Image (cartoon, each protein chain N blue to C red):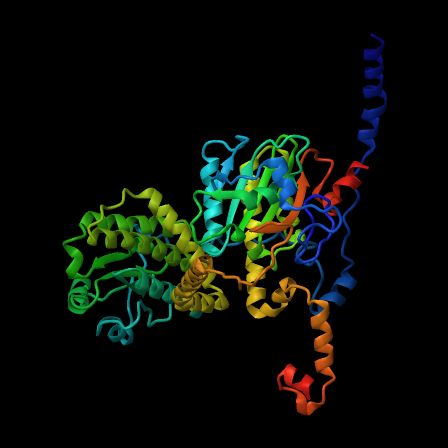
Length: 221
Length: 342
């Protein structure tokens, strides 16, 4: 888990980036604090030609059909030189209301792909549902699949290739999660607090007879 | 002038006297004593040549002059089929498609032709029966071919019957069983026979002749078969040639017993193998279709929000596609912005 601004590693439940202090409020200051209503496929930059939108929409639908808990959204737009595409993606997925996404799919289940054809950059962010399952390397591999197409200006083809690879990654992760869900759960469990750690250590040193009794009773004895 | 004088000098002065001076050497003469000694031993070498007696004239050979009737060459008397083979030929409906009780064909040729006729029988609704008769033989007068056909081939599967004279294919006769005689015109039958004879004449060896004959006859019967089914009759040449090539290949292959057994196995297992293959493809397609329709779910865990984001804080990778000289591999390490600016 990395900070969208300084790209430094942050811990699981950091309220703000311990390195640069970044929070969503900082992004709100830059992009606005109000809710944004957009579609699942918002081609603000106009890079998708007629027919390509249907092609991309079909690929988006296919992901949701195979993974009903998940939806993928695409936003294209010129963000300008000053804007950071990571911060924008992070902000958009938190502040947007997708009009054509079923209500049973909250933004936590979303994967947002942001493409800026002006600065020639693209990024991916994902909601908390996929936090244990997707890693930065996975998203990098997905974007890499589209790189060659986007270089040539074939945005739709690149998106379709990206989504195809994303499907394979999600498939692999879901199968792994089915076999060993604890492994993924451990990745998102909040770090234990110091007092709780001390309590666990003390419990580990209690005599065998006292194991299973209430901790309070053991202390009173 | 000088040349003429030189020539005259040569002729008159040199060559003429030399010719006059040449005399033949004397022939050897017998010494009477030696001759007596040799004759007493009983044989004298070169006696006929070295004789002083005149050579007696040989008497002219007396050759009887043939009469006009004798000069006219009589055709070789044709032989009837030996009587002992007649029952095998004509006593009952043949159990094999190739009837050759005299063994006129070699064992190998017999086997090849019979396998071809068996193959034809599987491929066509009209069986082809071939009576092999010697080229110098003839069917006895007591046996009428039409009667044989009427008697033995009126019932059962339709049949075409050929009385084939080995080495003399033009003498062959062709009959159809009565059940299909009406459907196949006599002209068509005649054309079938003629074209088969023509093909047979392309070969010199009698065994190869009968092979070509049967191949072509099988092709013609195929078209007769089509006519029986109601299909329009062929207009001859093109299909005939195509079919002929196919069967020739088959017949060449069938000469090899290994290939023959493989053919039989292929015929036997072709359908099951095809069905199995189709089933396999179907299963793979269904499996693929089902896999595409399978729904995958993720376990849902409680994730504490971070960075103030209510829905998401999973920041993935960012990639630049501004230049082809900066491949994705060089962007793998995502560098903090402030480091990038530095």
